[in-house]
Length: 151
Image (cartoon, rainbow, N blue to C red; front, side, top):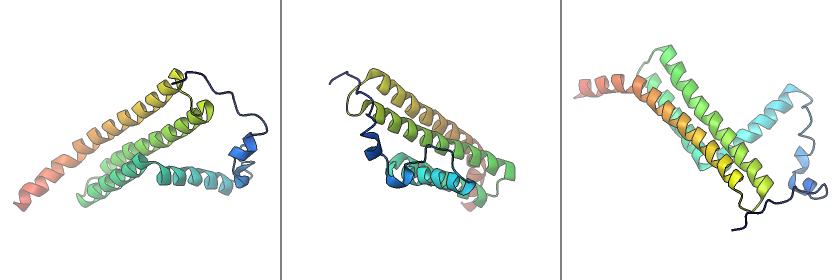
């Protein structure tokens, strides 16, 4: 594999990389609704293209639904929601970092690009493990009680 860094895109090739409707998205959004539109576009992109984001959304939904089903206290549901939400945030940031690295190095290998991608993926893994630990701590005791009472 080549370890050369790709040159940055030239001024002439940049517009072809940008969709017509997003040509001015680098500028400050003209109103709050436009800002939300761009944010929703990022979430939609991640949901449509990133398998792990879909998995995290599913597990997050399951954890919150289970905490409501088990009648956890509001603060416990909030803690599970916050930790789950942080995993989703980390996955979005991971996607952004991976896209930016891919834009920079294109199809060439670069050790720093690998480090950036691996660290971003590691951040998602750490946040997911913490979320599992928090959810297990809060969900397992009432779940065990429910299972034992059903037997």
